[in-house]
Length: 171
Ligand code: S3P
Image (cartoon, rainbow, N blue to C red):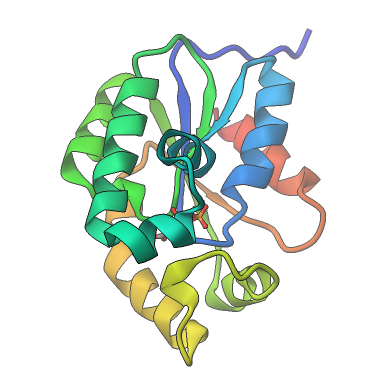
């Protein structure tokens, strides 16, 4: 059969709007593995939403919680993890992902990221006058780190099937 198996967790990294959660959920189904969304795990651990964590405790507290959650999750048997866009900037998180997981950078161009992030207002970093400029700045800062992922897959506009097939082909 064309069953694909992995012997380590699969970790999706990339900017907000790249499709990490959407593709991650589908990838997990295809691999018959559990799916975990790091942002949701952090919210559960904190007992409040990400905007509330940022507002009440600040970004640094969010980053500390994010690292703790991801390092703990990486101790589990194979599963698929969608990280928040900033998670892979943390050197300890990067080291743990490199040591224990297969990492995939879901790469998308600026227009696609702007379109995809416009719909939801739950990303504190984009609550600014010019979210496009902010995404462009994050892109510039973060791409060198995302490029350290084991695999790079271009995120496709439109239905997620094609991107999912690209991810499966890359694995
Ligand atoms: C962030 C991305 C978000 C979330 C938080 C910060 C970032 O996750 O973790 O708002 O720094 O890029 P998504 O990439 O899933 O939107």
